[in-house]
Image 1: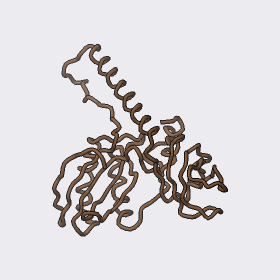
Image 2: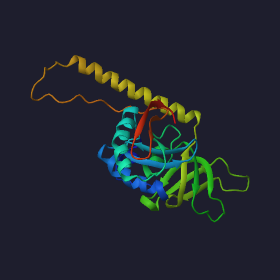
Image 3: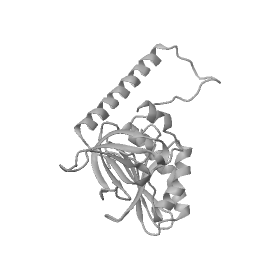
Image 4: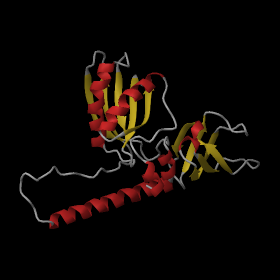
Length: 251
């Protein structure tokens, strides 16, 4: 994570995009529940493929979200959704991390994605009449809803501007493109994280051990980013009953 991204990535950092309808009501319910666990919503979708699936994509402010995190979020949200009864019919609850080719919904997401390729769609077209763009993220100017995204287009025609400035306040959808460069960076980040954890374990082995006592605290483990996303699913039935369907990797 860049220093700028780390400085603004918090649980309270607002999104540029928002859900509508049932998904918006689910997001309103889920946000405070997830915040208590240290997570924040990336996206909520109610999909109709193969029956209804409620997908809640979440993460920690640093972008990490493990399978254990997904399970913890699912256990916390499931009873709240049962009580609220926002979805009348049977549905599958899916808690997932953003994955490598993640949606870009906050300013810190775009700052982390500098030098990577993304697809951007705006709610309103620019003066050129275009509202869909694909290109390399070169930077972000401004703050909050006044921020402008600098995009070096890879889809520009011969007579079109190669570099455009896009108002993030008009963001409708943004997503990283799964490129070799993005995959390599994700793998390097995973190896770096693994090396740090191995060093921490080695340091812990060298420190004197203390037996149980009044000052002994619970062991803490670092969160590991998943590549691809971790997923926790549950099949929800009318009347609040649910049946866990296990854990898996991938969306």
